[in-house]
Length: 172
Image (cartoon, rainbow, N blue to C red):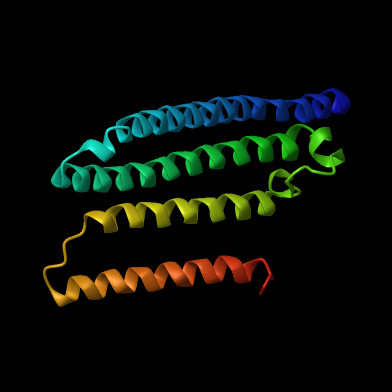
């Protein structure tokens, strides 16, 4: 009875495959959407040299906002990909190609749950920085306190980056 239960318990980890597959498909969908958005943005830029000055300035501003949104989309796709690979390696099986290959990126090799959390948190911090930048592009400073708040936000971003860098033990 104990052997049957332990076998069932061990095989129950395969339920994680649902999260792996859904995360992988979601990652591919985000890569697809960001790539299509990128193609449309580039297509709109073909008219850029022929626009009037005011229209060119508006298109430039719009393009910068779109580029920030594209970065955000790609970073989210990366989070989902790292999550899928990490869950698979932690609960199902090691990925032989990642372990054996000399040119495989060590970013995608996950050894523990803390390792997965650490890698995800770094990408999430980058997404938050991109979102901050996206909002900063639209900000209009009408008082000194707004400018001071914006400066404090930048200082906190620097602190967050420093702390994530220091947490790795790599003070290069």
